[in-house]
Length: 308
Ligand SMILES: Nc1ncnc2c1ncn2[C@@H]1O[C@H](COP(=O)(O)OP(=O)(O)O)[C@@H](O)[C@H]1O
Ligand SMILES: [Mg+2]
Image: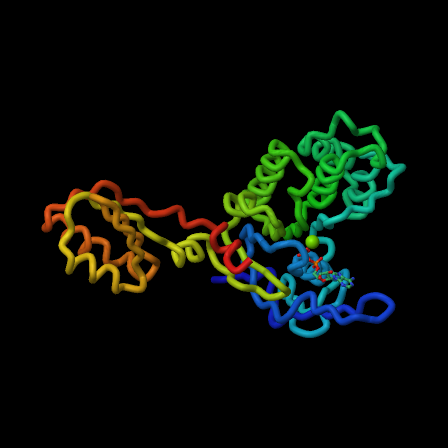
């Protein structure tokens, strides 16, 4: 049974910005869904529409058109808010509150009464901020703010966690800590939806990703699905190849070929990879030596960078 915790259908958001009310179509017909228990990564360059999508999901702004369902409720329903944890892209926290005070404040908002202090201490420890428990937020670096923001998003034990660029402003260790916390959320049965413009973060962490660009979703799928579309195989053959064999390879639009003095470097594109066995057996029959066969690291980067 599929259990969709987020469902978006043709979601659009248009802003009219500035004095001249210039029209900005920030999100233009986005559709996708997120299953309960998934880690879903929304990836796209700056200005792609990630934050706008997340603001609609968290009820901060209303969609201009389209349908949004969260936890089965249409639109943003109050019944969701207690079950939702949210890390905004920019956190405007109260600068004069200490780390402890801000988390204590959110713990109260989430209705935590018993063991509230213990819960706050637990989360300070979990995001490695115990040392700064009595420091004011105004003195925090971006990375420290991000850690407190993450603790704030998780302190209410939400079913759905929405994080806008949780790893931005963090050093590599900080990014790994955040990744660990996201995995831990999944182990506890939560759904995590987060955005990023940093590919490796998404690649290692997500069950599914969506690539958004110019307010439109280009692709959505499991990493495997997205990457297999881009699978290529590189082959290097050594020896004197039959000219008919070379001509056939050259004529195939899905194969690219570089002939060296004594070698043939062949790349099978996604549509040609199924012909690998036939190609190799023919090469061997001709007495060519198979020096190298490798699946080229189809990666998200290729997909992401494509058409910039
Ligand atoms: N409140 C707003 N008023 C006008 N334009 C906006 C507003 N918020 C975002 N935009 C524009 O919408 C587009 C998408 O922005 P955003 O969702 O913040 O992208 P991302 O988070 O992917 O970097 C950008 O062109 C941005 O300038
Ligand atoms: Mg953003």
